[in-house]
Length: 142
Image (cartoon, rainbow, N blue to C red; front, side):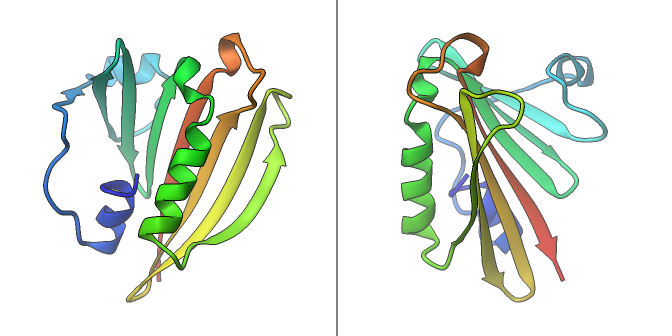
């Protein structure tokens, strides 16, 4: 998120991903629920996978497993470290699942480039289908 999704919007991506990803076919994207035009890449990590979907103004990173408990704190700390101007917008329960919460942020990248960042994360007691962590970065260019 801090090394690719946001820098793509800012126009300053450096280096390359530390792990090679596998691009998914459009059929595989559809099976994951991705809609419309875009590209999805799967990165293998510790027996599971992390997915990056890019389409239009949105980039979404997500994974499912017990490792997602606490991921929100790690990602939020990285966002605040790498982008000190980030502003919190929301912190609220998920209306569809009482085991999930959402946090939203806004970031002005300068030069008319802005983005919103939405984090969806499980509470500490979550199990089963609630074990999902997702970040959606949406570009807002004026």
